[in-house]
Length: 473
Image 1: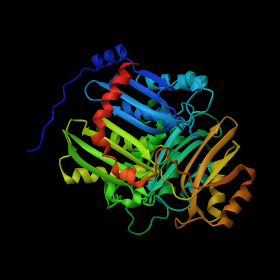
Image 2 (image 1 turned 90 degrees about the vertical axis):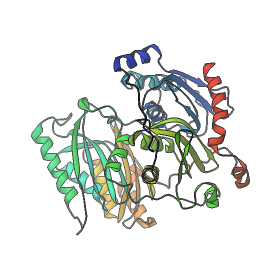
Image 3 (image 1 turned 135 degrees about the vertical axis):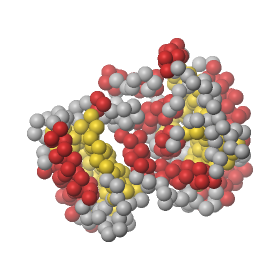
Image 4 (image 1 turned 180 degrees about the horizontal axis):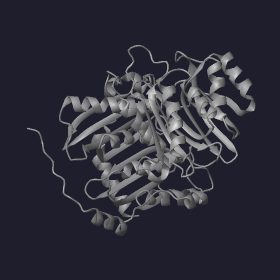
């Protein structure tokens, strides 16, 4: 018999009052752990708050080496072990203050410009700006697609102020921020917006192969009307890719859990996902190669699929990351059928692999000018290279970005092609190779890893200590 769960109706005004009475308490602790800074958060619970907190840390490019999550009932208690990219504790007072303010403000309206101005470093968050118009583009990927799009935008007088593009399983998703290159500011005129949309539609529909099934979407969204959740570009890219069904052919490793010895030796590149029932929850275990923003991507996928994370533990053993989630659907139900579990496995594998870009990384830093993205992508295309992932933004008079490139067949780039790109673009670009994988601080010993019990079985004893430590804040 299928279990039916009933959720109590909570008045939104009462919920808001509870949040105002019990705002999040954020403690940044540099004393408890010799290697990491502990960020401890507790507050009244709210759907989606876990993703909001992880997003704040991810936007700061902080490394989350471990975390413990508990949000059963009406209260949550979370602890994140973090360092900067160099493995150092967080000691900058402006950064600590920003983290405390940003986590609290994620529940009350978002991060303000004043908060960002007080931070003595750049924040890599990508929010919709009221000064620009944002276009969302999805469709079939092909070599040179971003070059064609940026060339058309340059030809019709649109200045690209920021762009993020992902490709995965022959699909492409982009969010491009524009301003009117002739008049400056956002593109407000409906006729002008329609003109831009028509040109983008034409590019996306060109060169379709016989038999291709393609669904092209070009949306124009004004920042002032953007719904909550749209404003963060990487969240939106996950949503767009999911809407394109890029998860349908994503499969995890056939050797589940500890049976895949190659994973623990750092030789298995596949993603391992197991799902089983556990004490009224669906327990999801994820093992894969560790990398930056892994926690953000998996939590984002669970949120997109309307799952609530009640408890979780995540960490890294050597170069392998392991995450364990105790979840239910937002309506209180667990995963009852193998079909439901299979779909979640596919979606988690897709969310993790979207960011695991293949290819050589090219970094660019140069003077901001009209048509810059078109110039860079044209040079890459003319030298026989294909862009698998791209990110570019403007910071005043300077434009910075990164591009991951392969050959047109998705293979390794030839040195002569890369040298030609660097030579033609001059000092604006440099090749930095594959994105380095972060190595955890724990032991790489396979035998020690096998001897350790499951994270899930250790969870409840750890949670008890966690609760005690948070109550002492």
